[in-house]
Length: 163
Image 1 (cartoon, rainbow, N blue to C red):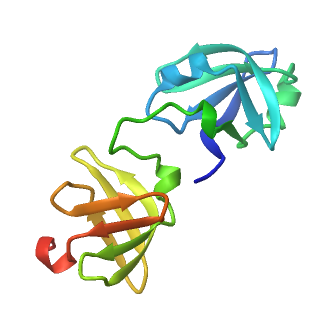
Image 2: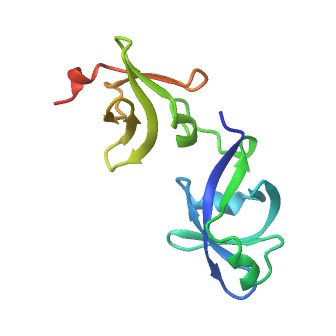
């Protein structure tokens, strides 16, 4: 498992005093109100203020005090340590932990590794790349088991659920 996790990406500047607009990489913008510090390029920075917009957080980060300074941080990622991550309910996983997990069917055939997790209205979908690409709906009757420590996901054979 990764020691640090991305929670947002800095976009444009906001105002004259170095505030930055942050695109959330988490399920909840409210998460940003609780952040006390973040890592940017491996350096810890205190979060001095937070405002929420409909789809972004606006943060005032220690050491970024002007538009010119804020512009230098555009497109950089805000990271937190795993200890500061929100605890997930049983059976839920961080996308960062699923990426690069090996995917096998229950008969032992390796399908490849999780390249990305796509979010759709009905369910998430694992995008698996191997000898060929496979999109696997994350449904209880398809995904047999997930073992993050072993970096392994077991699914029912594709021919049983794919039409």
